[in-house]
Image 1 (cartoon, one colour):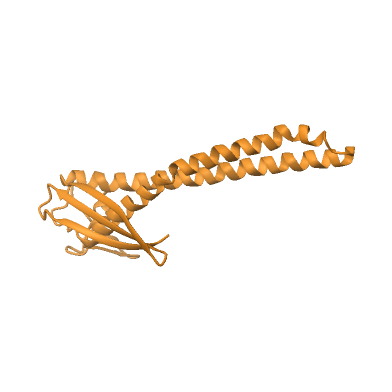
Image 2: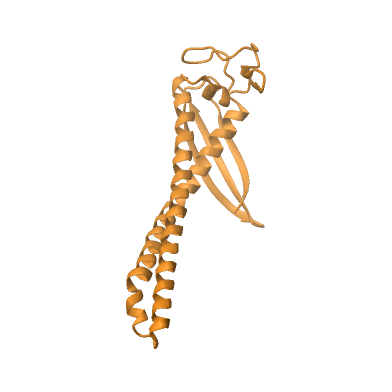
Length: 186
């Protein structure tokens, strides 16, 4: 079991170079089996949960655009590579024809490389966010805590996107509903 996942959500952890991760209450390394009896889930936990869910929602909203751009760029890249002979045949001189074809192939390969790396970077970010959310959810599951989060985009004022995040917790001893308003540049 990875206790640091619990400590990352708690208000009590202390970290330093000499001792590493220790509990702020006991001044000892975390030592528990499934759940920590002293865990305090409050501001740090709330911020991490909101940040991960908000970023995951935003990234998922970009999914169709990223996939569309990827397939469009792949098509354009292959058209440059495959279709360059047709366009080169309309030119006037053989030297220009050869240079044009080489340039078109180079441009096509460059577009394919850009499309691949841009798409791969997006997928890496999406996977990292899903993994982070999964880690938080697995810790909460051990404590029997469930939540429902509603993220609403409000009006944009002077370039700031106002976002309202409402989180309702179930099976938590504090049983509270929190509402957080976030201004985000975008």
